[in-house]
Amino acid sequence: MSEQKLAAEVRTEFGKGFARRARMANQIPAVIYGHGAEPIHITLPAKATTLAVRTANALLSLDINGEEHLALVKDIQRNPIKQIIEHLDLLTVRKGEKVTVDVPVHVTGEVAPGNVHNLEMTTVSLEAEATHLPTAIEVSVEGRAAGEHVHASDLVLPKGTLLLADAEALVVNVSEAVEIAVEEEETTEEAAPAAEAEEAEESSEAAAE
Image 1 (cartoon, rainbow, N blue to C red):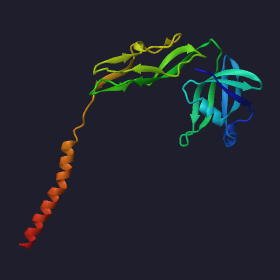
Image 2 (image 1 turned 180 degrees about the vertical axis):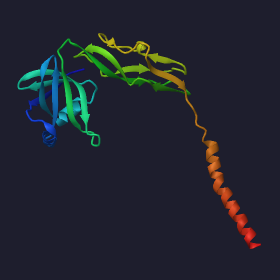
Image 3 (image 1 turned 30 degrees about the vertical axis):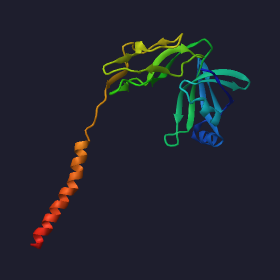
Image 4 (image 1 turned 45 degrees about the horizontal axis):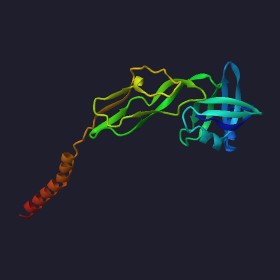
């Protein structure tokens, strides 16, 4: 994963009032921590940051007062309604350092006809070099039939990456597609109005007699 370069500004103000003002100025409050150092509170440009963190475990190269800081995105706080980023937690990392991350699992291919796949693990825990983090782990289900499974130990991992999840954990399973019988129900629903109309007609004829 390539580094996303961003210019950051150190901030000394905190609280909801400051956060609101920062967002109005198209800035995102963030904090950098790790390696036993004092946390650094910063603001980041909203548009560029939003684009930079679209992928999981984004690696940011931050220019803070002329100094480069490598940081890994650990947590993104979003507005529950507008889904805009309200705050970022960043972890300081160094080149060559190993870090633990949860990487998304992406399914590719099509299972055999009449079958469906079920993704049991949406992410998998890995240890990898901070500057070479995989953006996703792909799992092919091409041609797989009911009863076939993919476990964590079956995943093909990038070189230098270590699996931390349980090797026997089920990632994907394939089962037969279940057809829902709706034809009989639809026929019954269609017949009901006809039966009601027939009863009404019989009632009218009886009244006429």
